[in-house]
Structure formats: structure tokens, C-alpha cells
Image (cartoon, rainbow, N blue to C red):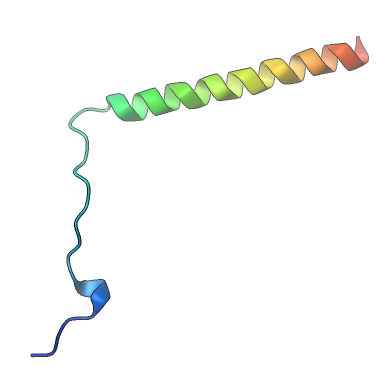
Length: 50
């Protein structure tokens, strides 16, 4: 039998986390980033338009 194509060979993958905590912490981080950008935009808007 011919050697399988490289795309068909099984490859090592990182196991999935046992809990949802990493995903929730990432979403919390993204929420903080969006909040910071919104606050900065508000401050700049108030500075320009009074």
C-alpha cells in the first residue's frame, strides 16, 4: 500500500481544556479592551466637540 498523503497523517494536537474558564477569561479580556476603546472614543469626542 502507498504511503498516505501528508495531509492524511494524524498530527499532535493540544488537548481541549476541561473547563470553560480560559474561554470566559478571554471574552472578559476582549470586553475590557472594547470598553477601553469606547471610553477613549468618548473622551476624545468630548474633547473635540465639548
